[in-house]
Amino acid sequence: MVHIAVSEAQAWLEKTKTSLGATLDADMEESIAAQVLARVATSYDTSAWTTPQTTPSLVRKILAMKYAAWYYQKMYSEDDGGMNEYALFLNASADMLTEGVVSGANDLVEIPGTISATMGASYEESTPVFTMGKVF
Image 1 (cartoon, rainbow, N blue to C red):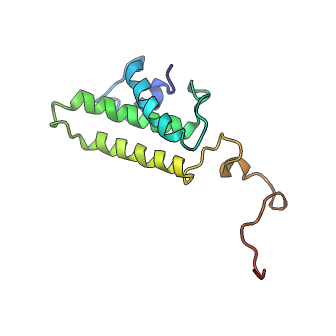
Image 2: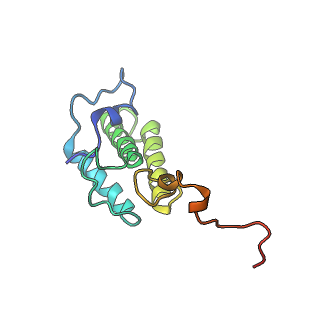
Image 3: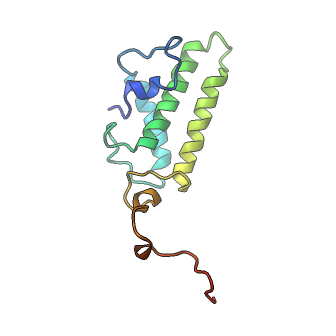
């Protein structure tokens, strides 16, 4: 079961240099997804995230970045001694986003109860964290 579309991973690659083709390497995508979702599962219930439609958009972006990084590294490892800067940058960026999701610094807008999901609530419905002029 794949969590991202080819176009999501292809977006991180220069189309004239690297084309993913019509399908993703399902084994590689599943391996990446297992690692990322295991990390995110410490903060969210990821059990229903089994398709692109059920996986939150930021998590799909993370998976796509990692897929592109791994694919690029795999394709060009012999050309650059295995240390491709772009692949390393993409992978590190995806890891930073993952840590942000786990810590709550990066919100998953599709998940009820998160900051972005409740931004539409009026001020009266929200609980203020700090009140001016209040004696504690």
